[in-house]
Image (cartoon, rainbow, N blue to C red; front, top):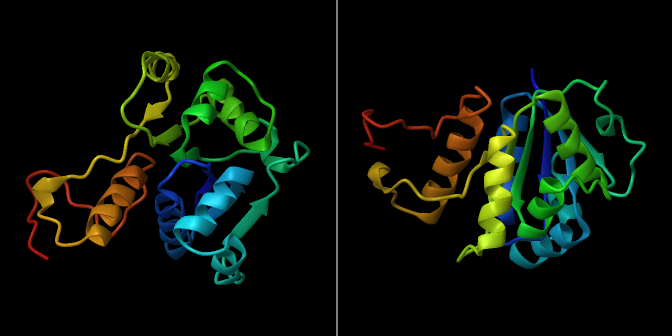
Length: 192
């Protein structure tokens, strides 16, 4: 079992965060969830209330952390995790992380991952990208973070939006050596 911090920010694409949470819990990993206030609003707008979604996982290994609680266990480097995924990751959050602004639990845990050398995967959601976005992404990439725009893999011949989302989720999880049934690498059979 791995301990993964999962964060959801206010960018569009909250389905990625929710699907990642579901996949991690289904594979019996521990999920430490942090959602920004704007992230909660986007989840509500794009899907349903976060409270309703989380209510379905009461019996799972899901630990919810308030984004304002800088005394949370995951705020400390001494609390060992196997990495962090921010999905979706807004450009505002990415910019704060790039400049070490730890004004919330989400940005503090990102800072911890960088300083401790733990995987930090940012599923960036913005287009087109400005020079500021690109410079911040380059800075974080040079620090060892993974910048992961959710670009569809059309070589898998997806038949639905769900298939595209699942393949993206599977690819993100593969970066943490976590298997997902939807993952298809290049050269494998794509028949479903």
